[in-house]
Image 1 (cartoon, rainbow, N blue to C red):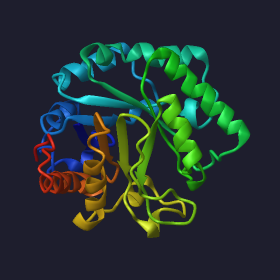
Image 2 (cartoon, rainbow, N blue to C red):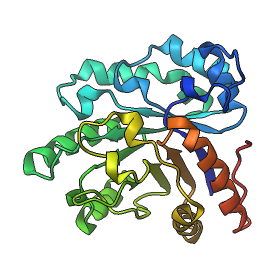
Image 3 (cartoon, rainbow, N blue to C red):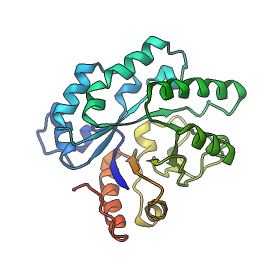
Length: 268
């Protein structure tokens, strides 16, 4: 079982002094990040798909030591009006990562409004077929509990899709914090449990202003270890990047895996 640990994005200016040395230029963030972690979830592709040269530059800056999970463009998950040309551009643009063996799963993060309706199920089938035809691994995150039912997990397993395991505040209609194993790859996203600021028009930074305790993370580690024989790869990404909480939690996670004699390949 290979562990890939990191954060949702790396261009965090508020990490300067906490993680990035004072005076570090944004263009040097990735090189510093790659010296400490072995995976990153690329969020910028949600807004604009980088070109092939941009991905080649990321590969060079990270010295091919970093596995990239690439989030799908918003037109593929939110507005759902992407055409075949855009999908083709996405698959083509990541060629440098693919050729270097540094491409992780693509991430489809659907919004709260993506309910489990016949129309949305048909859309999901069409989207996942595109990735299957391209031979690309796809992880799918749902933000409503209605998708988190056995029949969906079983369908994912038959299709070879990765069901994203999520950790949210335990509020009505949000998915439960449980490890989902629908393929040989597990994908975990920890958003924080900030119940007071999750809704109500708060900013993403306020929602993710939360630091996990060891007792909150320990069940995740135990669940991964219990499934180790079934898993080839496990991706864990902390989304609570506000104020560097994710950095502290990654160090905490490394210690928790060590309790099970499992080495987490990160250095902090």
